[in-house]
Length: 252
Image 1 (cartoon, one colour):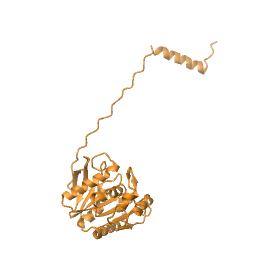
Image 2 (image 1 turned 30 degrees about the horizontal axis):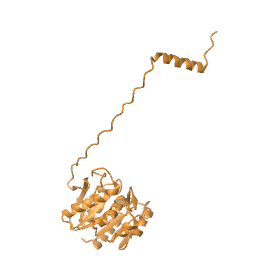
Image 3 (image 1 turned 60 degrees about the vertical axis):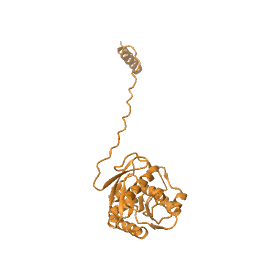
Image 4 (image 1 turned 90 degrees about the horizontal axis):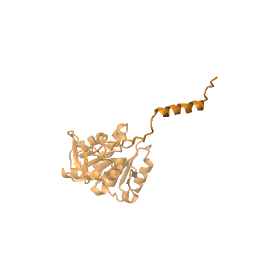
């Protein structure tokens, strides 16, 4: 009588048979390594009729949308992950009011050349100011939201801004840090805008507190963040407040 093999014995027999069929042992074949693809060179895209391109001091190309004409230029800086088109409701209103309005795509955003380097966004704003000045603009106004708000606060004194609007700007964003001492140096007229329920309101309150006079505040109801205010029922009120502030403090 042949007794059936137990489970352990059966497994051992199967292993022995497979080993016998495998032939002599060989060294494992080394895994092939695939080199990473070479970086693709960035090429300037075809520009729309209202788009412009200009170079930063560190050699990147920034693309922006230019609207209107005037001796006062307004530079608009978008939020993280945003682009120049986020500002069009305000840009159109300011162009109609007689300003030269340049909404920029920060490096690594929109159609501008990568990479995104948050601590260097001031270079994009400085390049935008030089571009406008070469076209006859005599005074620069800076407007920014969230990341862009921090960037315009960072660049305001370097470009000699005559007025400044910051919307829901944190004092520390991706390595772009605004100290109380730096904010305290901003002597130009300032308008700070933040929704009552904005998630960065408490951090923005620290920026507002550190800023010297003259300064104004607007706190729309709701929780819309930065340029999201142009998408809701507060749109007209926010645009009117900004245009009125600039008319009183910057011209045109």
